[in-house]
Image (cartoon, rainbow, N blue to C red; front, side):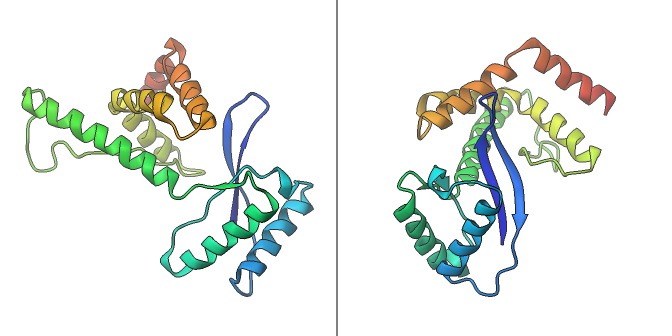
Length: 190
């Protein structure tokens, strides 16, 4: 089982870090909860301070995850379960990009041809490969308007204040001259 922590750092930014891999002999809810609690305790992190939880949605584990989230909510009533939130954000961004491409084709700014205008999406950069960062930077530049529009929607319609605040922080950072300048420099140096 892989444990990934999402937290707010000292500067108020939301960070997500791979934390630990735990070898579990069985996937019962009591074992999973015990192992997660053991890892958190080992690093002096209080289970009572959890403010959210999320699990992959593998169909063979769906029932176990549902029971596990209920167990954690008994101890931590504020540990809300968020199902596939990253997937929802990705789908929303993709639909904005698709609408933008349709408008560009209709106006004649994009030509239709085999492979000419592939709809791209943002992806996480690999841990050690510069080429994946270059691809991410290139895609972010090409999708800049769509990402900005999506962030505007999140600022107004995010599920809660944390999400709206995170979207506002990213939007503000992306709107600076420094960010755009460095983004283009990275692509030039790529």
